[in-house]
Amino acid sequence: MTLWIASGSALGAMALGTSPVACVSWIGISGLASVLLSVGVGLCLGAATIAGSRVIVRRAQWARAICVALMPSLSGAAEAALVTAALGSAVAEELLFRGLLVPVLGIVGSSIVFGAVHQLRGEGRWMWMVWATVMGLLFGLVFAATGSLAGAIVAHATINLANSRFLRDLSLEAPVRPLGGLLRR
Image: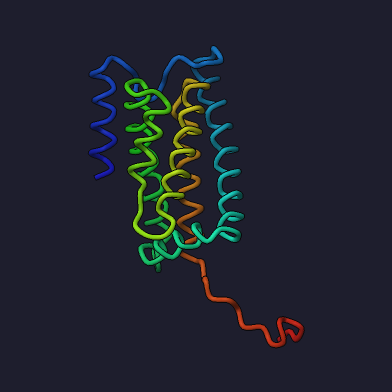
C-alpha cells in the first residue's frame, strides 16, 4: 500500500510539473546544501518531538488514551517490522502530503488534510488530529524553508520509529512498590 501511495504521489506531482522531493527554498539554497540542511533540521525536529511526546504522555490523559488505543497494534512487533513501517509510512506520507499536496493546497491546507487522515477513534481523537496537523505544518515548513523533502522524511521516520518502539515496550500498569517505594527490593 505504501509503495502505491509513494509512487502515485510522485507521479502526480510530476504530472503537475513539480518535483515531489524538491521545491524553491524560502532561504535561497539548493542542491546538496539544501538536502544537508533539511536533514539536520529534520533530525532536530524529530528529537524535539520525541522528547515532547514523552512529556505529554506523562501529563495528558488524551495522550495516554491514544497510547492505549495504539498499543495493541504494536504489541510484540519485531524490530524489522517497526523500521519498515516507520520508513515506509514516512516516505509515502511525505511524498503525498508535502511533495504532492503542498504545491496544490499550500502548507496549511495539506497539513489540515494530514491531520484529518490521522483521526482515531476514542477519547484523544481530536487532540491527536490537532497534534498531527501541527506536525504536518512543521514538516511542511521544513520542506518549504530548505527546499528538500529529505528533512521531513527523516523527522517523520524518526518520530514514527521511536514512538512505535515506545508504544510496543510501554507498560501502563503502575509498578508495585511496598510502602510507596520506601522499601526497595
